Image (cartoon, rainbow, N blue to C red; front, side, top):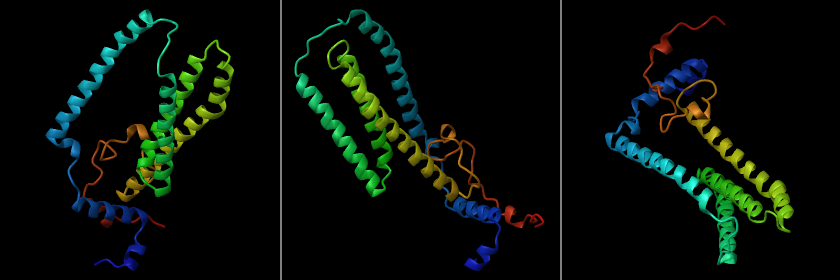
Amino acid sequence: MITPEELSRLEPRERAALLRALIALHHRPDPLADPRLRMRRRRGLTFLLTCCVFLIPWIVFLALTLPVRYTAGQWQAAWTGFDIALLLALAATAWAIWQKRQLAIVGAIVTGTLLLCDAWFDIMLSWGGPDFWTAVLTAALGELPLAMLLFLAARTFVHHTVQVAWTRLGMEGPAPPFRRVRLFTLLDEPVLELRIDDLDSPRPPS
């Protein structure tokens, strides 16, 4: 049994190697290596790519056929319902942050996206009308800054979560950039190899 005093005498590199060795003893296989999950992943990718291919001609069709002006029913219900959804998203995000839950990441992204949509439709639907500059001012001073703040918060939450996982894997230094972080295992290459020999390697002179 290694005592806390013995651990404190190890160098950071040695403690990191020991931590990787201990994690490797209980390491679970990469979930993405499961053939069933790989099949679901391929189906999901195929579905998403099909949607992208379908949307291109659909957008062109709408751009050529939709009227410039259109009278819509249930205008009040549409905007009231949208603002209720925005309120619920804001409240859920605040609750998740208060409770320190990972749900805050999803909430921040969803709420930021709703704010961008709100600004877009406010400006575009008031174009040329008396409320146009009010919509622009509201977007510039309220909706867009709050959306950017929420996106930055989501990025910060993810960054710190990855950094904590990186450290608990026994890895030294900062975590990799978010664009390189892999699902479930952080990196493509294995990082949980059993490397007891690192503990026996000669220490550099102090």
